[in-house]
Image (cartoon, rainbow, N blue to C red; front, side):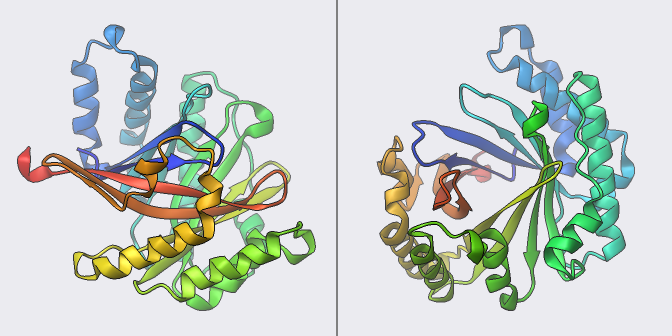
Length: 302
């Protein structure tokens, strides 16, 4: 079973993307289940075949298995139903050499996957030099996930989720994501709202930066994750009430708004709750928010 699954809700879209996270140690069981399926009768057979190949490639890379402990699978909604993979580590004490090795092995993993399906290869290196140019001191950041997205050459990019151990880096992250010299009308007013959401949160909040490295440019987005605890459910509710107050308009045209905004959905087998937000600059230049819900299975019943 996946560790966690979830949905990404985007402004102006009537559909959501689907994500699912699996422990590296359990991928062999997932591959075995796929092999037992009659894929010719499955609507998602194409994605299952790609997933099976991705697991086979990872099985042949013991170094990458040692450096990572989970893999996210993302399936985009129609009309672009591409499947993408992100390898990650929960290790908060990565050495610089481990981070560099993970970048290199993830590149190798995705090169092999693209070769298997005759997709164009991505080359957005040198990673260390580019990340150092963005952050200055890269050694203090934890590499949460690394993936590669985009099939067409112009859209190909490497994607990385980086987290700092210090709250002092939050203003730096915001400046990287939303440089002052590129602010559009109305953008300045949203930055204080983001800062207030983070600093006034009644529950522990993790702030990460998502970096997309294209061949000659990079894009950055800010991810804000309130840490859920059943002992602090009132504080968790306050956080999302504040988020809704500030950013509900971003999903004004999205479908299933009643589903998105309900804090919890539960039945005896599955449950879902609001999980985190991502802030990014839209093509218009305005700061926009995406919302994510998780989806978990009650493993005690299986």
